[in-house]
Image (tube, rainbow, N blue to C red; front, side, top):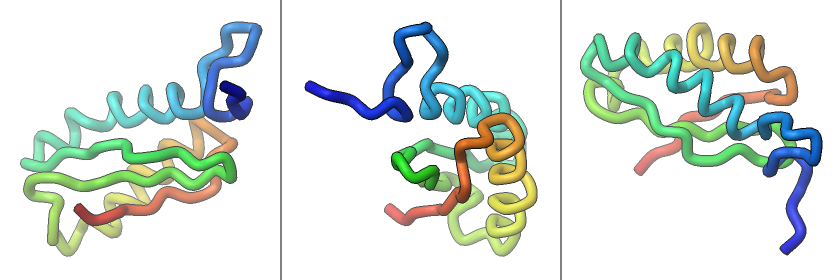
Length: 91
């Protein structure tokens, strides 16, 4: 099965975009869990769109949009420049 270079690790054993995004989310998770919420990585598209799903207290929280843009997206884009956008998806 053929794979895209952004979806899988390259032949030089560099982490894939998804693996790098997961690492950032794992780093952010304790902060989010400290407020009673959680975050799940749903997908990373080939065109740089990351989909995440909020859980717990984050669902329906009026601050979740600010958390998404100023916290989650900013950190992911800073550490994984291939990412162009982070969007929250529902259940």
